[in-house]
Image 1 (cartoon, helix red, strand yellow):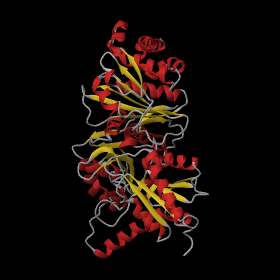
Image 2 (image 1 turned 90 degrees about the vertical axis):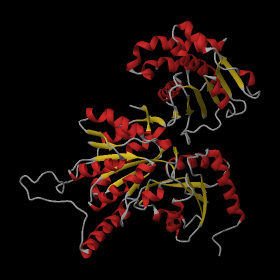
Image 3 (image 1 turned 60 degrees about the vertical axis):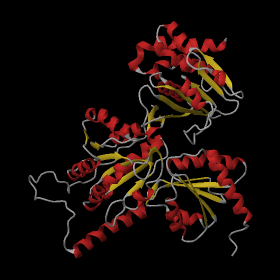
Length: 179
Length: 359
């Protein structure tokens, strides 16, 4: 099965690293995967997005024009990408910053207050990982257990000391979604 | 070991593993990550990295390094490639090996920075001034770069001629799993022609200025003989589901990936569509297409341009078969489902016309 996700937010919210973490996790699980960042005219503080495709067979196009999943970490991203979502698709919104009252009625909404949850963990920087935990729980794009197991390899040597914090952040998102 | 890498970074790594010791580049999107990767990687690999003051400087640094016997590369896109054309013409005339990468964007002019295939003509027709061709390789995935890059360096050294790798913005920016385990460093070729200082040997020179027209003609025929040899020996392509096909899609690079997705859908519906994917755009797989035309009448050319390779398909088929075309210029990358709908329509139309083999 092929699932495509657009991960979007403002520059600095970690949306590109959320995408590459998801993509690396999928690769280590043995799935076919592509990751396509928005590039070129992006600026720090502006909007950023990337497309991740995960599949059981070769992926023809890394472009996601009508994805199954959209993650919106801020309001402009929500406005920009909710229209692209397939009917019946999943919209993961950072409800700390996104007002979902104007969301389409034919999609599933998962609202996660990632900023508040991240602050409770002690670092706003892991809001992206909280959202990733929630996404993996809600979408079954990849295996949560495998991702947690491979997290050291996914994050790489440079971020070894952040392993525990990231693990906890994934768990927070995962558990929030379970409730 | 598999790792997730962008096409640009993987290309840089593949170049280093292929023995490239000298990289010169000037930044331009969507290939900046090649320059970035080489800046980081080259010093540790014992190589040379220079960010030049312009694309023209970069290609002439390549010319100089190559004349001195180095395995060398530069990369660019769009207007940067146009600036390099004079240097490429000199590389051909001087019979110097080099690899030049073009991560194509949607032109003309400054154009868009999105992936496109608008530089097919420039790459396959020489591009610069004079009577020449360059080998053009068109990879379709990040993994395929690990085959195409060493192939490019090998062909460049083997024929003492520049080789173009024609990618696109998507291939450069996209990250995919890649492993370099199968990459074999091309052998070192005799470079006794190189200008290494005349210590202990007579002085030698490399130049392309020949006033005597007869000698110039002789030189040009010599180059042409080399090009004929390349056409004869170096054609590379891949076929996909062609055995029972009633319609053959011709597509390359990222376009071929999209076409493959479309063909899967068509096959699910029992539509007999296959594909030929040229890996060398020059030399173009002329014979393979003519061979396919013996049993197939309909060829569907798909490009991310207004139609450039379609001319080579026409030349290859020499009037045989019916040629259909669909192109999206400017950097628009259609989804496989869009292409599927278009091919479907053409497939039905071809059927409605009855048996085309009959006069």
